[in-house]
Length: 281
Ligand SMILES: [Zn+2]
Ligand SMILES: [Zn+2]
Image (tube, rainbow, N blue to C red):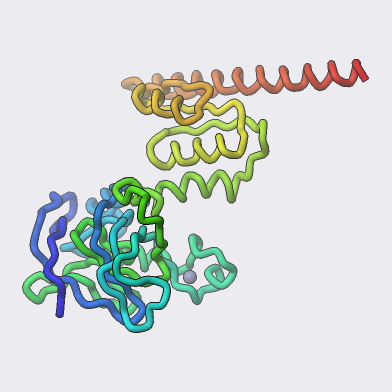
């Protein structure tokens, strides 16, 4: 029996998110039905709406879903009704990168995220019998309910606030993963981040955890920079773009010069202390 749901449907390129009543198919043996409590909104959802990925219309976007499991397929063993979960990004599990435990580099990842269908081409949602492209990132979380494969779901503590957890599905792990898994900074390394939205702030917090110092945040918005300070930025820099290319370049150079100064100052300071220690010994 399909589940009647409410979803935000986009019917054309650059179209509005229109609230509509749809039908959601039943979960397959390895799938989980989740009642969405909250979903983050990422720029990728807006790019999808605007046709950047050629996802067919009508479509339901949303890929930072957090919610409560309502039902599970027969083969699902790790989840049961009532579990609190976050739905993360999909991967195929078969390609060379997936087999090397690099699911974020899945060679079929783009299709699984953007095509609006399961891997076999089926859609999850319908409107009066017609397909709605609804497996965006294999979840389409801009809806009251979503279906996802159990491989892409992470169980979370029941006392954690679900309304705040959705962003860990994308921006949280994108920013923190880039810093902790790829940059791998050492304590005392300097760190600068350009743009402190959800991804940038996640990277900044990871840099703080890694012991980076100084931590420099650059953004166009004072309010974001104020937030960056509360999360660990030791220096902030407004890089207002101005009204012309020349102004934008000048401001960008100013920001980089300022960072060099902060970084250079600290490095000289560290170097000086090292020399002092050598003299004393
Ligand atoms: Zn995203
Ligand atoms: Zn793969």
